[in-house]
Length: 405
Image (cartoon, rainbow, N blue to C red; front, top):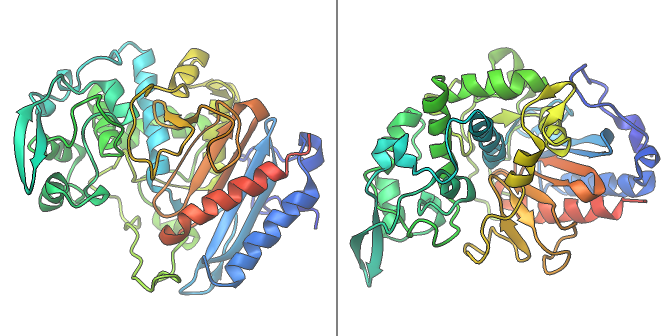
């Protein structure tokens, strides 16, 4: 199979240009092997379907769809399918914040309560047996803390301790709230850690989303549309799927094929009140590819400059140093920048990559990475929460194995 011939027949003008794999240093045979493996996994019923895209040197050499877009109806997957990308929202919202930073709206070491006073005078919960003691935060949460996940905030699903239970009781996850409402609710809850002490995956980027609203005077969705989606031609990215496009929405199995547990994804059929900066967007592989190509181009694409080169360098550098935490998410050999995990060493991690590679993924199984040293990025979109770790590793292994020069 010549995978270059399988570049999306539904392509529209906003997609990146295509290339034969060998013209951009990729192996057709090895990309065909990747396609076969993904097809086989779908046929075995391990995931309902997938879309995979690999680009190098500014052109797309592999763009394939597999399986079912909707396993309930049996509708086939196409490369223009729209996916809930969950935490792949975070790099986009982080970029939006850095666009405002470039305008001089804030400093990275500014305390967040300068702009969001609900988060002033934070308390930290210290566990003593089954009880907690609230102590004052040693310093304020900074905007850098929020972008690199050292704020002391958490996610309610990241544990079962007292603070996580408080998040659940407060329904901090509710989609029936505004971004301002959520920040006000977070301001009434204690921090899990002292600011700057530990990397902990959290609601931090939701707070960044609210910061974008306050600084821009616009809703988060409107700011993203005006400042990122429209300039980049990301026509299918937003906080819900408009009714005319619902026939392109990818769905999960009703039950996890490995555990039998019910699978429930967020409702994206209606415009939400809560525009989650940490996990609310939907997108397509073609749209997200344009965002990644902009990053790989040091902030510009097709004449539109969103960010400066030094800003991209800052975002994709390690901001943790000796700070550690959450080894289930922060892989060995990686640090974290401003919106992305960042590879620090060629070895140690169990997946291939180059120093300087950056990546992230989403709860339902979506994933991407950018490798500036190889001028390469790759995207895989699935809606299979329980299988996400396996397919992220498999996809990355096989894409790197397809590099021919």
